[in-house]
Image (cartoon, rainbow, N blue to C red; front, side, top):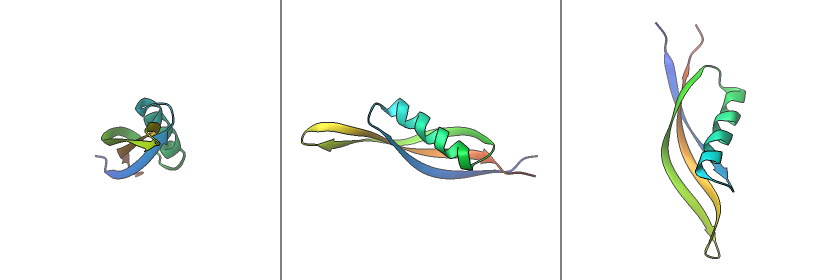
Length: 67
Protein backbone atom coordinates (compact mmCIF):
# COMPACT_ATOMS: atom_id res chain seq x y z
CA UNK A 1 0.00 0.00 0.00
CA UNK A 2 1.26 3.48 -0.79
CA UNK A 3 0.28 6.88 0.50
CA UNK A 4 0.31 9.92 -1.78
CA UNK A 5 0.22 13.62 -1.19
CA UNK A 6 -1.14 16.38 -3.41
CA UNK A 7 0.27 19.88 -3.74
CA UNK A 8 -0.55 22.79 -6.01
CA UNK A 9 2.04 24.76 -7.96
CA UNK A 10 1.97 27.58 -10.52
CA UNK A 11 4.24 27.81 -13.55
CA UNK A 12 4.63 30.33 -16.35
CA UNK A 13 6.16 30.42 -19.80
CA UNK A 14 6.42 33.11 -22.46
CA UNK A 15 5.93 30.39 -25.11
CA UNK A 16 2.86 28.21 -24.37
CA UNK A 17 0.72 26.40 -21.80
CA UNK A 18 2.51 23.17 -22.75
CA UNK A 19 5.90 24.72 -22.03
CA UNK A 20 4.63 26.08 -18.70
CA UNK A 21 3.54 22.55 -17.72
CA UNK A 22 6.93 21.12 -18.68
CA UNK A 23 8.76 23.82 -16.74
CA UNK A 24 6.55 23.32 -13.69
CA UNK A 25 7.02 19.54 -13.60
CA UNK A 26 10.77 19.80 -14.21
CA UNK A 27 11.12 22.27 -11.34
CA UNK A 28 8.85 20.30 -8.99
CA UNK A 29 10.84 17.13 -9.75
CA UNK A 30 13.94 18.77 -8.29
CA UNK A 31 12.30 18.93 -4.85
CA UNK A 32 9.57 16.29 -4.89
CA UNK A 33 10.35 12.58 -5.29
CA UNK A 34 7.85 10.08 -6.64
CA UNK A 35 5.68 12.36 -8.78
CA UNK A 36 3.05 10.16 -10.43
CA UNK A 37 0.66 12.63 -12.06
CA UNK A 38 -0.32 16.25 -12.52
CA UNK A 39 -3.67 17.83 -13.31
CA UNK A 40 -3.89 21.21 -15.01
CA UNK A 41 -6.39 22.91 -12.72
CA UNK A 42 -6.40 26.33 -14.34
CA UNK A 43 -4.94 28.23 -17.30
CA UNK A 44 -4.50 31.99 -17.64
CA UNK A 45 -2.67 34.39 -19.89
CA UNK A 46 -0.86 37.47 -18.69
CA UNK A 47 -1.47 40.51 -20.91
CA UNK A 48 0.47 43.75 -21.29
CA UNK A 49 -0.57 46.49 -23.70
CA UNK A 50 -3.05 44.18 -25.41
CA UNK A 51 -0.50 41.42 -26.06
CA UNK A 52 -0.01 38.06 -24.36
CA UNK A 53 3.24 38.13 -22.41
CA UNK A 54 3.05 34.85 -20.45
CA UNK A 55 1.06 31.65 -20.23
CA UNK A 56 0.31 30.62 -16.63
CA UNK A 57 -1.00 27.30 -15.34
CA UNK A 58 -1.89 25.96 -11.92
CA UNK A 59 -0.96 22.30 -11.53
CA UNK A 60 -2.17 19.85 -8.90
CA UNK A 61 0.78 17.47 -8.49
CA UNK A 62 0.47 14.01 -6.89
CA UNK A 63 3.52 12.30 -5.44
CA UNK A 64 3.96 9.10 -3.43
CA UNK A 65 5.42 9.47 0.06
CA UNK A 66 8.51 7.48 0.97
CA UNK A 67 7.97 4.43 3.16
